[in-house]
Image (tube, rainbow, N blue to C red; front, side, top):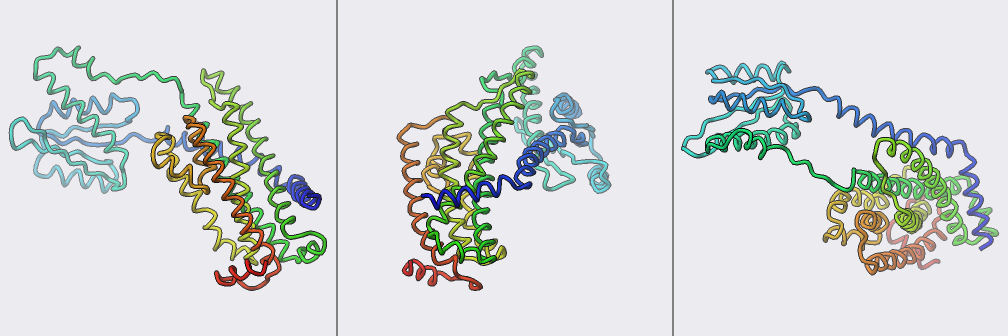
Length: 401
């Protein structure tokens, strides 16, 4: 334990004292905050869409124009073309090519009574999926309004029925933002510091420092020291970010009448799953670093480290919206996804304690198995230079150790 402590202390102090640690601790939150603010600013200042509505029914065109332009979030300028002429489509297509128009809706009257017209949307940009999602409810509202008017219902009653519903919720978005922020914080720190373990091993293999250290320290002690030391650096950085974020966000959001939803229980589970996830992934990274001799070789193998994390980021929205669903449960019990997905489930809606205990138990068993495998790969691989091992050779390393 003394040797492990000395290695961990050396790894920790070497990284914390480096200027890059201070620089990254300050720059990463600034860059992430700037990215979020910039994205919100860009989305908030989007230019108004210019569209045309081509229809035989002039009143329908006027009603649709009023519906689209009257909605604050739509930001559209609508031109009604009624009735269309033989060259209307050619003129509108030319406007699309000249970027004078973002798209047009061509309304074809129904061929049989009591049926809906046919609506064709022709966009300037074929990949535009936002505008159709805004047009569909607007067209549905106009058709419903016309249908109710035809039944003789007074206009005030029609307007009252079609008025948007204001839904009062207990959460103002703070819980959602907190879950996402802590999820991606854990994601990046586990990946970043896990890869730091592998890079540290490659650097020491290149400088042949290992050959000196192995004269007095066992490989298992060296690997454990590196994992603990680098992990402590990550935990220190996370602690600084969380404390700073709580101070800044609390002060800013309270003034705006909002609050951030992070409880002490969530913080405790975050630390627990971060440590377990970091140990798991850094052990895999240590084995990868021992098997390779250069950064290029490591880049080819780091996909094994990234794939489970990428899978977690793909299903995160499904887990947040359905934390007790089959997908959420399956991913939370898969050990390489447990740290991220089970934490999200706990933060959104805490599952039964037996599920949390079972996921932690499975994660610890997986960590022990990975540590057993990684320590044997590490013991032989750190002394292998200039040769990229294949699977049969790695299996022989297990027998050697």
